[in-house]
Image (cartoon, rainbow, N blue to C red; front, side, top):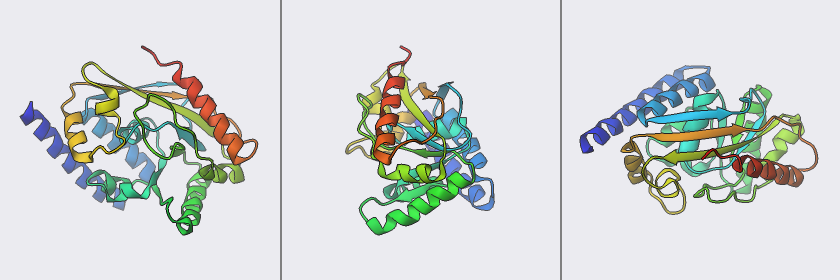
Length: 237
């Protein structure tokens, strides 16, 4: 067990270093991100089931359970992400995120918001799906936290399609809130080490039909939250 986990962890490190160099040289980073996400998924014994139409552009608003969400979504479609700025400094995953079209956001400094919004507009204008986690933080998945409306403005200004998305996980053995979700005061490397020891992880991604932005940001946030909540009721047992 320990030898297998150690081997998988070393592969994870090698993948990250190799992916970072490759990503720096390529121009098609969204497709590059998808290929590497699929490799990580195989390494983690992660299988992904998708329901609904996979969005090809626009803003994708999803609930957030932890860093695994990024690998899951990226494995099923070329896209970019909006992430908190702390992720840039994470061991291994921060390096990968930096080379994967990620828009890093520092909510603590208002002056940093305008550049992040400009980058979001650029991604959306390129007709690239941009994945946002409007809860603003990850959780144990037992409920969907309120959506923050501020980062929905770029989609409003560009009339970009909005796709509500719900993520969930299943384990044969173990606790999803404690071992798959990454939230609260959990520490990255011990969490990842434990995850690498799981014989199988199943993820489900549910996409609602895309819709046009209508109303102000608060109305959009409320509507998207309701749609994601509705999708969560369709979890397959």
